[in-house]
Image (cartoon, rainbow, N blue to C red):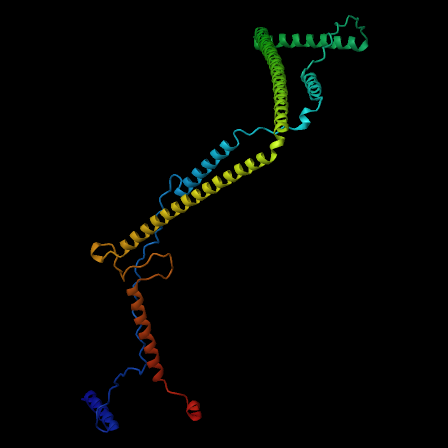
Length: 373
């Protein structure tokens, strides 16, 4: 009764404080926060293939038509020059008719070269005889011999002591060792003699080769001298023939001196005929060259017209490639994109700019700006 009464009294007190109405509960309300702007949708970047290099053009084999034409023209000109100068005579210089000491100087130079190339080594001195003088012993020699004798005695005493202590004799080993050393020395001497014989053979072969080369050079020199004499004789005979021809021409000129005017007129007529023939030939060559150029231009014009006709073929024949707006051109640029992607990006940029302009319109101007306005 007391507990219940206490509770009732407490409840009555609380009711009196609120005036008889129940207590109001707290209702949560969200904060008036600005809503974030939606982020623009990210456009997935298409996977672009790496730029592909164009295939190399096919190699050109063989000369072109222009090169063939140049080669033919060069060959024709060369043949004409050869035919023109086939009967030409070499120049005769007066200096070749003068007396000269060329043969004597050539002979002296060849003799000097042969004397320099002929190697004669100096003869070796004989081997001196072995010494026969008696060596006189002095105190130092006696002491050396005594020391050697004492050393041998000490070695023998040590060998006996080792034999007594170790019960073995090393004389057989020493004898075998001395035998092997002597064999090694004999083999070394044999190898040295063999190398000496080989070197002697090589030296002899070198001397024979040198002698044969000297003989070949001498034979070549004699042959060249003989050829030089033959050439000199041929030149002398040509000079004599030229002198005789000039004498004959002189007699002919003396005989024909009376008809100089007739000869001059004949020569002028021949020159005019030759000039006319040369002009005709040049005109024919120019005409042929022009005709070749006209034919080549006609062929080029025909090829160009064919190519243009191929470009104008209608689409039904599959000659023209349709433009694909979704294809990315492979020009090796970093920001290359297709036409469809470019249009989509332009739409996104325009919408973003419009949203920024509309957002700036809702911002209230400050009081100082309104006052000034």
